[in-house]
Image (tube, rainbow, N blue to C red; front, side, top):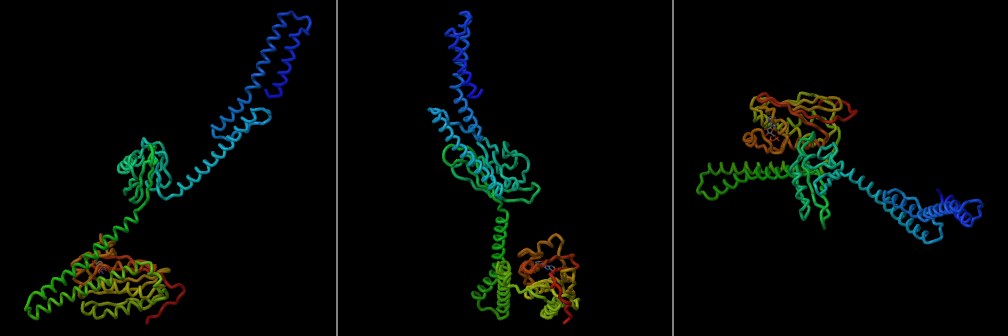
Length: 458
Ligand code: ADP
């Protein structure tokens, strides 16, 4: 019943009560008139009640709508009494609450977008240790794909160390920071740096917030650097100890016969040379690895056969001393698109290794073969060969298959590392094929200079 209908009923009821009470309707017995009057009074009081309750009912509807967070309808202001003031206050409240609800919605959307884009994993737990929020970064880092909300960390991750960390963080005074390892889970092993803290930081805690950051690469680089420093110090200390020992003997033992003196001095010279080579190699490696290296490269068409023949000619005295035969099997090949100096250093290293690890009477060959848009340069020897299980490791810094033999031939264990890094900077690749006791083949692939004619033998 709307307001107009209520008003009509009100007037009719009032009229009926008046007519009945004043006896205007003739012929009606007194009890009937009293009954009708009572009915009219009841109808009147019902209508009055509806009229007085209606604004309250409207206010209740608006309050319910506000409580439900939906947009509340506005109240009308046409009564001309104090109810208009109440409706105005209610409308203002609805306005402000509506604004706040919209702000909160926008804020939640923004937060959700940030959490979705973060590569860090974010996890929120309640005080019972149940997950209330886990962003996509968390799922990605831990390889978790099913529903997680409402479950415990140990159920979802099965990693006791993460569970311990989060449990301890709940009551800890400050944030806890720790590395955690994630193994398997259908992806490579990872090291994650975890920050976990109870929140809020002041007042009673309501939950735990944890952020996980992938530091696998950083930790790996740290380890390589630490190993490198340890290896380099060890490599430098060995010749230095020899120099120190023999120099002290020379200084303290007198008189020494000339033959002994010459032997001692020879040892000192040899070890000093070894230190110089080692430092030169270390410097070269650090230069190639530094960011400045690519700028120093000068790319252009390079005749690989010619470079190989020049290298073999330069090494002729060493080849002769080692009683080895060496030749370049290719007369001509298309030019490579590369840096000449880098290529010379690569071939020099590979040929020097071939000389070091091939016994007298052996043979070393270089071959240059075009393949699609690449050139394959093979340095082969008939030397001692390399066992299959360590063929990948020989490109690591300081790795030697037989340390004693390598040291005896004056090697540093850095040659193939330098080769690998040089090749990375000239977009080349290297692989090895070797059979212990049969010999080794180092195959280098280089980009070809496009559209250039074949370079004649020269
Ligand atoms: P090194 O200075 O010791 O030669 P490299 O990095 O050049 O260091 O080589 C690493 C190791 O690989 C060597 O110590 C050697 O054991 C093995 N190696 C390299 N080239 C050959 C080869 N042509 N024949 C056999 N072993 C080789």
